[in-house]
Image (cartoon, one colour):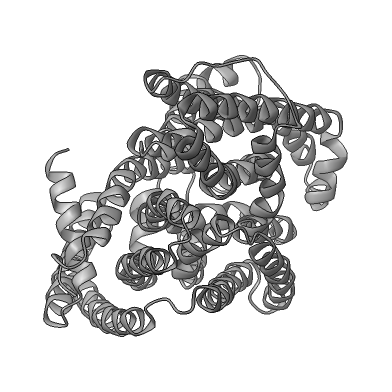
Length: 532
């Protein structure tokens, strides 16, 4: 397969590159956000309380922004746009936004009323630490309205993606990170002076960031011609189709997020720091998912939706195969890199002030085990929405129920053996099983997925990634002997040398093995970042 012979792959990679560039900016800001929080609060009781309080609305954010909205809304909106024109599509958009406002508004009110029993159900062991449970309840009540803001932002994102506008929607989560960083810098000192818990400023920052996500996208949507209408009709066929799909779509894409939620609940009984260590580790691991998984899925869902609308099975197979190939060539090397370099990465990112060497070791151990499932997390983002575009929403929903049950069993088993680290391992194994099951079922539904090409790409990139990992491990050990010391500039130099060596080996090996998708992706990234 040559580049010239695969124009559809180029278009997909280009769209994914647009989304990936914006997503990378957002994810990097997310790492800076975590650095700020780690510096201010470490992995102590306040950070544990915030992570539990934020887990529920964050679950909704991840599902709506990166999953269910794309799977349920984008295919329906795209079809309305193609068959009935923009006016009908805009009307449907207003109906969706208004229904989200009503539904999430009711959920927020219920959450505010039942905050205390809800937190006790999820983190009952916090009652053993004086003030920790009350703080978690307090933060939960502040954060809950974020749920409505992010649902509306996801609705706007779905409309823009349907119109092939990817950059601003993918960049919008950066506003959430900016909101938290700004409040951490400017409000935390004020909270202390006012006699309030400093972590309260971070909860307020989440609300500011949620509002920013919506505000950044709204002007672009208006320029596209959208005019908001205060209408609500739950009997509208288009809205009913979306709402009927939203339930299975949410469930079908929920495995990773539900499993993370289960991890949080189980980790609350593993002592102070466990919840935060897992959270810091997953945030690092989520960077390549966002750049190389979600961005590819964001670009592929509208394409698959258009192809499904005209029953073009060969085109769907090609789009899915292109998406999976691009995902493999980016995520498999990222997996090996995170496993080999977990400790220096965590040390450079977080180890300062309140974040201790003990926190570094604990977070790095969780990161290595989370990284095992990286390809699984990313592949699910691509495969699950395809079923919704094909009108088979029950399949991913059923698989998710199975995976969640398997994950709970694995986590209950592994947490007894490895403590909090077992939670990361169980979640990764469940993610790989989830992706494998969906791929098997999708392959049967589509009559194949260009299997030989995908398998050959997998073997080639796995070989290149393993050689890269061996080279990185040797270079890191050698450089540590040459440049002893823990000063931050030395850490950066040593990590940069190791990463550079790894990229050189990976690029050379991928070239020798003729991994065309890797060359295509790297060429696109080079061009894209050359402009920014």
